[in-house]
Length: 409
Image (cartoon, rainbow, N blue to C red):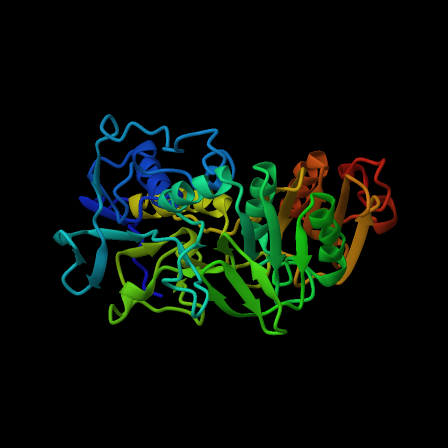
């Protein structure tokens, strides 16, 4: 990686251009001003809408309880230039120029915050009634589907599939979720942790079909590879997302196997004066000993502070957070902190068939991750214990009546 951090005592860049007007991009622009940056900051967004937050799209906006979720940011008073409906096309790093649909934009420092884009279901593009749920326009197209109480087939039992199914059931729709794997959240959680969540679907009146691969989508129906034909007034595809970085081809900016921008521990890319933050970027975690690609809101909130500090260059900052996310599904509040793949011990707190329980993952006696269902205090205490690396006693930890912080070894 190139050492492009401004060293203490050197002048700040004059022009920072941020590509992407979602959480990561907006927070980068705001953090620059909060940390004292006085140069020009240009925020470029492909969508025409005022920058907005995404989590409400699968809840309040979708159900008609809110018209939008625009960020409460006064861009004008902060001296932030917004260029909306402007698509980034290419980076010419040797010339320090960003090419866009509205023409070239010169920069001294460029921040890539283009987020992720949903993976599309092969063969379903252009079929009437097939939807994604990623943007404000997506949510607005889906709102009348819920109002009219269509039979809905959701493809994918991941986080977004569960959240959409929850909203659709609340709206009175008949919902079937089809999942190619043997359980919900197969790509995110171990089998023994995801298994209890399968019952949540039935409890809510949602039909969950696992080991179910989509053969094709037709107007009004989804056909599975076993010949089953599911009536579908609408189909919602939630089979994952990938970094929105295809436009960087030929830029010289190094990408990973998943299309992620390979940032270093200060969120700098392989090209001088270019940073990357949020869903589009991966970074090496010293805490977990591996490169992390995190597609969650909290990462898009926290990373920009590190980017801003390193652009300004007064005190170089390393980015190594404890990852965190939450999901509201089927009447339950699910929270996760950390990264569990390196764990050597799993400890359960509470009965997973009940309304509130926690799973803790330890490595060498120290907490590295936890999943809390209806136990927000466990999550809050656990997150701090992960950060501190405090040794814990697994036997004490397994007692759900004992505060998690009181399980120290």
